[in-house]
Length: 195
Image 1 (cartoon, rainbow, N blue to C red):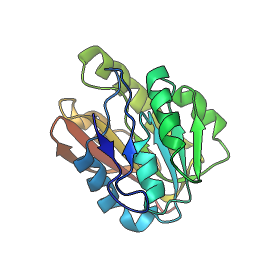
Image 2 (image 1 turned 135 degrees about the vertical axis):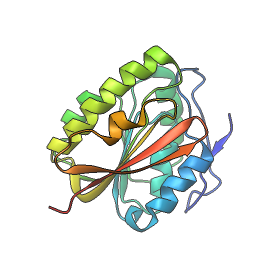
Image 3 (image 1 turned 90 degrees about the horizontal axis):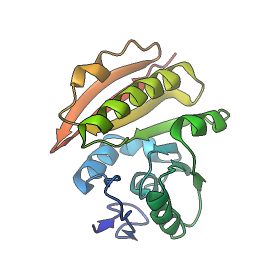
Image 4 (image 1 turned 90 degrees about the vertical axis):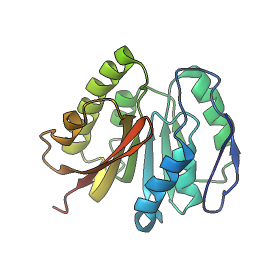
């Protein structure tokens, strides 16, 4: 699958994609929608790309002016493509080749402005596991110091999953804001309150 950066200083940069069926790159139209939504927040932001895959989201953030992007990925084939893609980026990219929950423990001293979470989906059993992990992740982010005031958290998931599972989560500092459907994917946006 051909994948390229759609905006900023790396616009047109072609990215390697994992050869595995278990990783699915975020569609270009969805990536563009995310960065249209957060265009005024991405400049000088700290960006966290969870389940980074090829790294397209984090590289797109760097391309559009983010100070740094942290990439979390531990799937061997995805990691191979990701390392190759990060070698094309000048600076500001940090790779964490560990499990997502373990990586967040290692990142305890960083506070992010933008977070993108894109767990595996597309197969029922996989989606059930990912949904449980997503709930844990959102609670963890909600209760941690990993988010700046007014941070945004995007969650890409299956459009066939129950939307209310995420939109009605009882969170203290993160509030579900909106959801948009893009083909087989749904994009949830959570915003951290100012306090």
